[in-house]
Length: 236
Image (cartoon, rainbow, N blue to C red):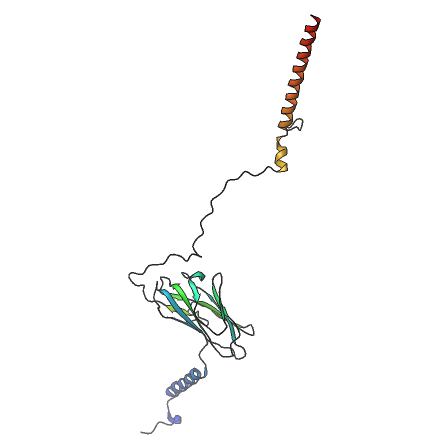
């Protein structure tokens, strides 16, 4: 049976066919969006010494990636992460909220692939590693959205449930709270202003000066009494 000519095809069927053809053309013409992917050798909650690998896809046609910065998810601290491997010559450094991996600018179109080792994954269903990748021309791709259906989703690692005998490790030494230093009670030396506070309101003399004056009066009275007695003894 030969296909029905378009001129004889019902309008409704013609519209559906046209819409389907347009959709097929659109889907094949639009390239897949660039993004950063993450995977792990042990994607399980509370797993220890896990190698986490990242693939930061390049999307610039004019410049190469030179730096990848990651903000760690809750439950993983910078002290829990060590460098695995990455592009030749690139260096790893910890930040306040994560880490950076950077070095010589890669070739245009070359993705940045590297790995880190995480001391222990948190007890969660998934962990998102917000990522900023910087190109040699200063452009920054921000893969930071927690919605996986968003335009710039953060690379997210889905985790299996923790093993029955798995337990959280104690915090890394560098992240544990430092002990509160023992307070040492000291007596500060009096300041010049404090030294003058012993003055009284009437004469402006300090308590020490008044004591000295009082002692002088006592000595003077004693001297007068002694002299009088001595004179009386001489006349008798």
